[in-house]
Length: 378
Ligand SMILES: Nc1nc2c(c(=O)[nH]1)N[C@H]1C(S)=C(S)[C@@H](COP(=O)(O)O)O[C@H]1N2
Ligand SMILES: [Mo]
Image (cartoon, rainbow, N blue to C red; front, top):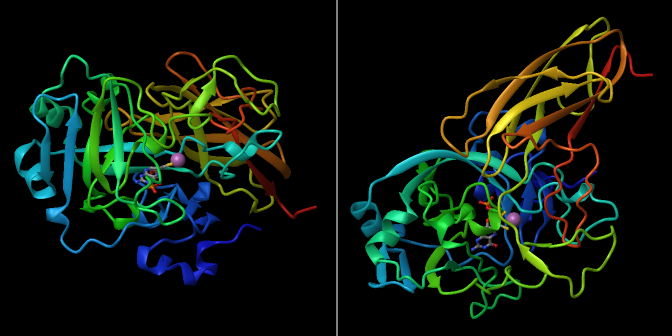
């Protein structure tokens, strides 16, 4: 049994109003959401996963005076307060998925390095802020502007503020997408400290690590950024597929970009026992596909022999997740495994078993499996 966050009052989760999360690590603090708690269209803050790479930064007394610097390959470096950001640029609220790059990692065989996420390193919240592109336009990008480098106020694991816990960046085209936001509110509330308040980035569709929390600086660079989390095997994939279990030393790699298509079953919960005689099973869930759209979701209760198409609720905006539901006929009492399979707009579907093994375990999008028993358990 995984430890639940409620069992660990000493880490101060009360403060952060979390409920029902599974703790993957205390220092740094990492907690994922059991799939059945992701049953809301908009993930409540209380159920939103947490991923830190270092320690928490010092508390902030006056959020409006939080400062963000934009410098590097720009005509006019900017030094903005949160209040200034709010007053100078048009506000946007978008519901978008935030997903850890390692979501699904625990399903790789052999085990890959890193936090053993199941499918719950994900949430979909309403983010309010301004498009980074509007701010970059004001700063004036030079022709040499090729990449961003993101900096946050959190010290590294050893508590050193001289070292970034994490500093990642994106090619300038991703930074200029209108959905890439500088965010100060989540689900209509001031952005909680644990989620990077007063100010964070949201770079939707790509690994969550790009969505820098406690954002203090964006350095516009003339080359691929090389901060912690950009080099070696961090958030990079081998250019050539590797045999499972290889150490990956010395292999050529490239940065991770869009996250792969994935779906989760949010009801029924894994391990549910249904009354004897139940012959129709309502299944619900969510699906998303990185930069792409979800084309369809199908569900099986017979190991993939037959599939039932799910009905999808259209996303509110790009990068929102799709909520889906299906009604499945059950032939009799007994034990069933439900698998949900999403396919993206480019025809790529989720596998039963991850084939793209890599040393740090990114991109594992195996189908979520939920077991149910109808009638008395044998
Ligand atoms: N400053 C800072 N930003 C960060 C991180 C971090 O450790 N420090 N972790 C990143 C990772 S790996 C993920 S998946 C997301 C998680 O965001 P959340 O904790 O709000 O769910 O934040 C990203 N932003
Ligand atoms: Mo992450």
